[in-house]
Length: 177
Image (cartoon, rainbow, N blue to C red; front, side, top):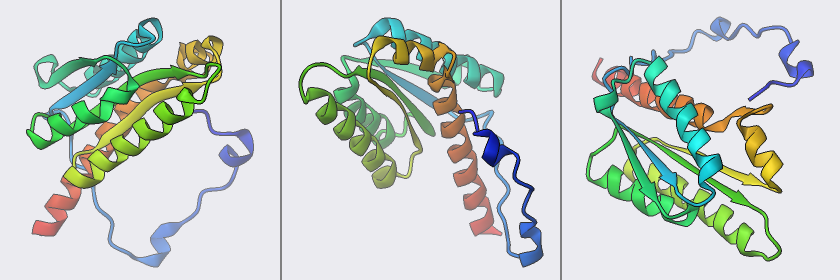
């Protein structure tokens, strides 16, 4: 995600002056990551999956530690994520889908409930679940966010999942110290 210029140009803040404890993120190279991808709007979602898989590979996640799971659409993402988390299949989950606004209110239901469900899975299980579901007004917006001018939100979701996995591992280590 691009940071607006106004924010990017702000001077750094020296938080070290407060002297608080911080945690160090643990390496995620050994993490098991599940990518759960919707089949609906496949031409867009495949580009999100490509971005996520490339990011995981670049982060040192071995292919045998990555599982790609397909579901019919964004509505089914939370259920699949919950099953993976409860079964201990993954240390982090990347949920990918694409919902494009149509002529009815169905869009709002799918987008909102998918997001709510994914958040609930993360909170209930403690397994990081990154929401990489695009909620777009039209196909042009979707393509821009799936490797186009607005970047690749699949890649960003994978980065978020790895960051949370590393944070939680770091917290586990700090608790034992």
